[in-house]
Image (cartoon, rainbow, N blue to C red; front, side):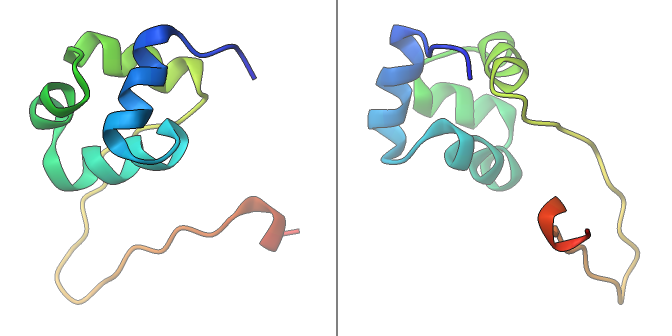
Length: 77
């Protein structure tokens, strides 16, 4: 993996866990603006971090009565 920037290292301290775990969680629950504010960056910085860490982001629309599950690729083989 690419080396993390100083701001990324600071954000990990603020989040209390690696950005690979914190970013998806925070973005899903807090949204872009609040996540950026809490981690000391901007929405553009978050996009850069997602790309640098190879974290995909997609919008999914889930109808009532359905649930979305994320399954690690190694379980699909």
